[in-house]
Image (spheres, rainbow, N blue to C red):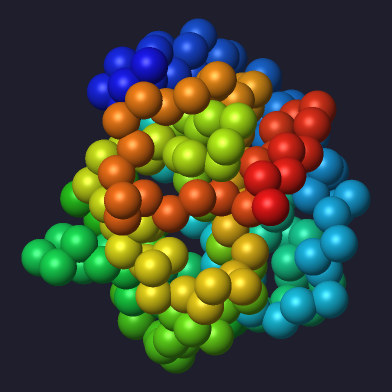
Length: 188
């Protein structure tokens, strides 16, 4: 399937979930993450959920990161340049919901992309080769291209992988892993 077809299909599948199902599936994904050998690192980039898009609730992962005393990095969207500016989450971080309904920090301690060890990547769909389909703007591909090659890119999904995404571009950045409620897929 192509990216536009997959976007439409998976947005539709997400809409069918009740809030209770999203909560449970999100908790299951967070518990799967605890099984991964990633917790000895320092800087973890996390997206905050857009509730209107029925995304995975990342508050559980936020709690894991806080409990393990990890540096959590959140991003702010730069609409003109299609880039992300990354900030360290602290007790004094002030948040605001932007025009796309994305919760993001207003300002703070900026962290360069090349310092980040793990990126939890939002997606709509992915395939068995680690290719992903996002919302189509390119923010995460631009951001991931700025990260070190060894930065772990971990997708989070309610669903199993597709066999193949047919319209991959040369600038698309592959995932190392994708975590679902029941399985951890390793693409490395």
